[in-house]
Amino acid sequence: MFTWICPKCGGEVPPSYSDCPRCADKAAAPTAAEQPAPVAQEAAAAPAVPTPAAPARPARLPGWALALLFGLAFVVILGGGLFAYQKLQTRAEPPQQEPLAFQPPSLPSPEAVKAHPMTRHIEVTALRLTEDSKQKAFIQFAVVNHSPAEIGDLAANVNLKSITAKGDQQPVGTFSFKIPLLGPYESKDLKAPVDTKLRVYELPDWQFLRADFQITSP
Image 1 (cartoon, rainbow, N blue to C red):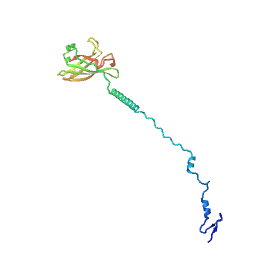
Image 2: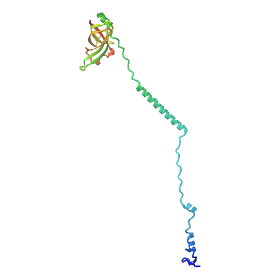
Image 3: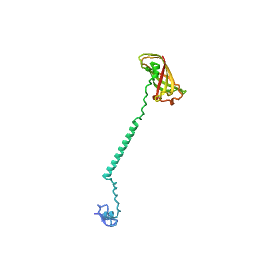
Image 4: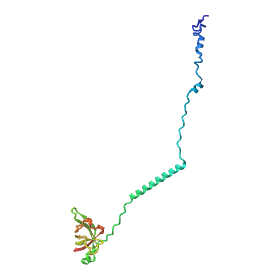
């Protein structure tokens, strides 16, 4: 049987081996210096990694403090709602107006009735003072026939007086009117210039005026 000689160790190697088995065993066996250190030693040598601390929980208020806070919030909201409601009610209420003074009807004086018996059936009312662009005073008024008969060619002179004026007090203004025909129970709106020394804003308001008239026709 033929053998071959290993050039490394000089030993005979059977022809069935392509490598020397003795040299192969020596190469496979690690040396003590080349052997790895135990896992336990490596773990001991490694530095310890600090474990992260758990996050701190925020401090919670006690139950009585929460109840107090909710109670205060409710009182504030309720008070604000009541205040807003009162403000809205105050704005919604219309401003109170002073009652107008009572305007007595323009009744003729006894002297005027004696002078003309038709005076008792005539009323001069709805007095409204105006002023034109030339600062001339005008009065708008209504003449009412309270009788069942028509009156033709009705004319009268009118004295404007304050409702608080006495009988002998001078009128604040005078005017006259003439109506061709005034039917039974009919009224007509008229306008006439006022003879006065006062400006319109200096004259009494309509609710403080009365008209004393004297019929001149028929």
